[in-house]
Image (cartoon, rainbow, N blue to C red; front, side, top):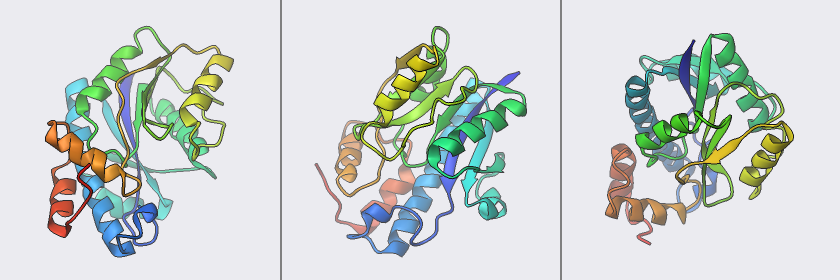
Length: 225
């Protein structure tokens, strides 16, 4: 079996992505920004997958957008997301990847364009003595979840809350899984998150997202926290 990197993405469509950035962005601007974020994530993740010997799986929402996303994701195996909520879709994707013959699994979203490829390697390495590795996010969630194997029930809790990390760790304990935390990251969901991105750029931590930075620079101004 070979491991796999699973990226979760939405089709960059106005009114469907980055809605918490509206305002100040207009819906079409939010979609354009997300398209840049997605392209950055796919490029950086592809390079990391090659370096780590991982297969590349892109899980797309909505399902009918798979063909359209294939055009911007060469080399990726594009699959539909399935399930009524994010937790269910993550469990379904992990099960799907395992059925394709992949283990271990590294799951990441497309909302964290500045996430360093080295963090994916750190999460994978953490599985040597843990069943689960998570990269915490300042909003109480996480950016990366690495699994030795699918763990049914691990994500069976509300996912859009400030307790997501805490709840996932509690579910892991209930399932008898050893969990480790790796280096933190952050998503770009609200306008204040752009201050974190600006700080990351100043400290050399945003090399993975040149398109995202270029789009924000061209639009300007954006928070410089």
